[in-house]
Image (cartoon, rainbow, N blue to C red; front, side, top):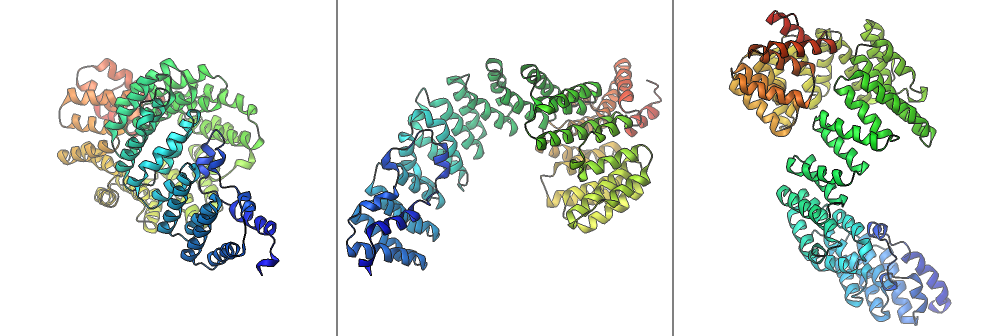
Length: 590
């Protein structure tokens, strides 16, 4: 049988097997220069094998054994053949057979044999490193990682660091992973050229391990070594996202020296996520000045203006965004951009109580983009125009496939009823949602808020405490119950505990800070209440926060500023229930 197979025929078959290796696509994608010939396991190596009958039989038997699922014997045969021929292709094939059989120890044995035979092979070293990490043998990766870093050309270091972070991201012991990588990085951490990016990568790993102070130290090292290197700024942004405010000066210092648009926009988004609208707006204004044709910057700026009730500015920024839509490359991109603009424009106009303008914005959305979100907003416009029945009919006529879409329709209808002040009807519909999905914290939370609206305070408290029990990090529940107790002047120590718990999860949330300020006012501590409410108002120029601040100013003997805040709030939202109740209770005419 062997005599019927010519070596060239067997070589072509073998190439089909060896060309399929793609285990290290992440490494290869990140490499900037081709690997030396020794790093590859070329398929045409096989054409140079002196194929005598015993060796040919051993190779065929190894492949047949692998095909039959006997990885142990297949790998043994292939490794034996690799040792006789001294070919990387056979070591690689043995390792891949073990990997496909999901035999970690067998794959490790093959990779070690491969590396011992070819100690300078980066490919063998990469396989070994990956397999050790697959087996969660993080401590054993110092040597192969060090070898890989030493072999990486200087121009490819930054890409290699990204690959390393990805390789270690699934390690169960993140602190150990960071320590191992730091040990392997010693040469790079002390090299002038590579140190900034190396420190930044190490900082990301430390942060993943929960070592925030050590990560901040790494960011400071990176920026001190190279103030113009964006790697330190990106790490600082990630730290800032993870509530390490000491990292913010690093971002600001970088932007003062190097006004990189991508990092400025990322910084603005972090500020927005933290509800720090005023400083976010400063960054966005700088972004549009720096790049007047950047659609993302204009759209984000428009949304920020809208969040702060700056309707004219929001309209102008959004108009600039729409002027740039024709510059987008494809019809699909332009259509999606018009949808974004229409939704934001309509919502902003609704908030400004300009229902006609809201309708105009919706009409600018292409018909192909008329999905559920657009139709639900159309229903909202109808309801705000006093056409609640038509709005509900529009929602109910929308098609729904499955539980999730049906749920979205009901939630949208609840919102229509809530906005119209039909709290009893809204609660009845919301209670159906609650019964259908009692474990959903968002639905339970909304049910609790509506229960309070109709005076079912015991139900509200029961629902909110059930969320706390099942989802202890759901900070909205703590804040809602704490604020409700404080507003009624009941169980103030319990209210403080709840609100402070909410602040632990969201320390920069202006609404939770407002709750704490309102509670402090109820406790009779006017100076502290004033400081807290001033801080909340700086974070978010909101009508209800302004109303609370104005009341404390009024009681504290500063009626002029109190009246000014109330007048501004009335201009923005004259129908706000909290504002109206406050003015009536205090008998004030701003």
